[in-house]
Image 1 (cartoon, rainbow, N blue to C red):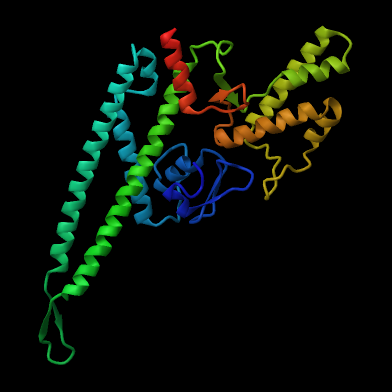
Image 2 (image 1 turned 45 degrees about the vertical axis):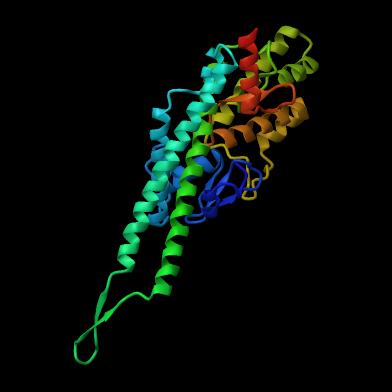
Length: 321
């Protein structure tokens, strides 16, 4: 998600060089992958795969824990996923799916409005209460009631705060639902042949052996030797990418003069060097903690991350065929 469109960015900074990197404003920790969704788990705490923030305010931590809990609860109740589109017989089925989604959204909106109304009613009753304050000299108690004008201002402020919190929760739930829907689509897409469609699955952080083979064919006379050497070198660098102790990046996230990378570039050329650097950036963005390749829905024609709509269109086209 682009910085500025998610309320969690109020507590995070963008990490230069990493589109999905975040830096916590509370503890200054840099999270190089996972985007704003992983950062929310950092604030909420309790996730065994994400280090919790030790300096976050309790109110902020509680808010994002509630957001993540609501998102998880709604995912379990939602029986229809995007992958179900492949089983729809015609466009009428898609229309019914949209109606179900709208009904669910309306129900959630009515429930949120009711909770907001109850909350405001409780706070109004508190604001209208009388308070007894002892005087400094006689210990007498003065009865003070909240002025009508002040009560109006207070009520307006409470409404603004509650409305803003409700919108933040809704925004985070929708964002998390899109992420989970994409994961479901990726999981279901693995059964299709990548040769038949523009959209396919790419392993982010996995080295492409093609530049290694091309470089070895130029260096060695025997094709058999070249294939064997390419496989050995590619496997070695894949293990380097999985090693959490290998950090060829400086404080500014720029590549340092890593000796092994320099030797690789001199030995096999810039294409192999670029392939390793590209895979390193991908694994830092998608799985910085696990250090293993991650599946991503990819548009191979345009060499970019595929949109959900592109994949859905292909599923509908497959069904018609």
